[in-house]
Amino acid sequence: MMSKPDVLADFIKGLPAKLAPGEFLELVLAGDVIDFLAIELDGRTDPWTANPDHACAKLLSALERDRSVYEALADHLAQGHGLTILVGNHDVELALPIVQRELCKALRCRPGAVHFVDDGRAWRYGEVLVEHGNRYDPANENDWDSLREIASCQSRGEQTMSRLRPSEGSKIVHRVVQEHKNVFEFIDTLQPQGAIVAYLMAALDPSLLDRLPALARVMYGRWLSTRNAAGLPPKRRAARGVGDDDVDIENLALEALLGEVPKATRGPLLDVLRESLKPTDKSLLHMIVNRIEIPDDRLAKIQKVLVHMLKDDRSLDPQGPADQFGKAAARLRDATGARVVVMGHTHQARHIGPPDMAEYINTGTWADLVTVPEAALKPDSAGLAALQTWIVDLALDTNLRTVVPTWAEIRVDAEGRLLSAHLEPRPEPLATPQT
Image (cartoon, rainbow, N blue to C red; front, side, top):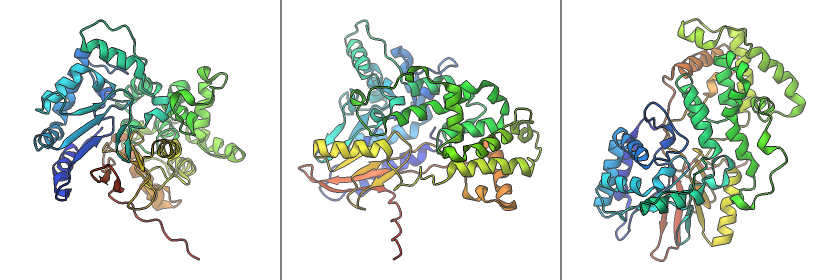
């Protein structure tokens, strides 16, 4: 969810001021431009909107909600600047011809004025390669073959023969995230995603432990993402292991709740988990709604688990691990001659490489983020007080949402040779090791 569309609109309006004489401006939106998964129609969401009229209705809902952004894009096009939109995994509906026509109509431009990259290709310009990045995330791969056939038939008014298979990630959003979002607003904003989200859901409402498979689904997408650590393209990965289609969800939940804790220390932490998530306890949600102070001993147990889960976490560090996406970028540079590869998808901004000549950039997100403050992890009375305040705000969805706008700023010459590439705002330089 993007709660501050005006910030993005102002950013788009300010782009021409960055141009030097003789430069041309191309704004590339690297996927997930519209979150069709989150838009309700007739009181429900869908992992994929098969009906083109329904997809258009969802588009119009998004246009109305974030009107300032689309007005800024319309002005951008009217001034003669370029606009490229890549299809991600939350907006596969943007590949449908009728949806593209409606979007161009809203942007007050002729058909073709917007360059849609809607068939699984990367966008190339000289030594620059841009793609969404979900291609290297097994939980969120697009069914491009079916999508291309569906769009092809719809462009001709023909009956579609293919049925698109939504990704596991889209099905999780549909079945789990939307089901629980009214109670747990942080389910898709808290970073890092995965185990910590499921743990805090259970901490707020221990009765969820009686439905462990449902809780585990929150982490399932994250688990699937780890199945491609090498960042290989979809059809070139190692053969799937026996039993991958019949994952033991309850064991997966336990593994995910324990996070990356070494097996040798899991016993003590498991005891803490059990103590902090007793189903017989009065739920924290009940206490918060009724303004009952959370006991310090219970806060201390929750804090201990959070400290373990967040140990060495660098998920929002622009120079942190790039995981399979960084490995895919390195492979793409070798294979194509591109000097910089840009992706989105993860919500985790990255700048890997020299300050003015990045080799891999992840553009991060303009959506809302929630993080655990360091003050709430300190093992003293002030830390417990900070944790109490944070948990209350988390449960009530107040005061915690932040927007951290980041983008890739890239310059090339007329022949497409890379002149500079960096994440904006520029990350702080790494500290020089003391010798």
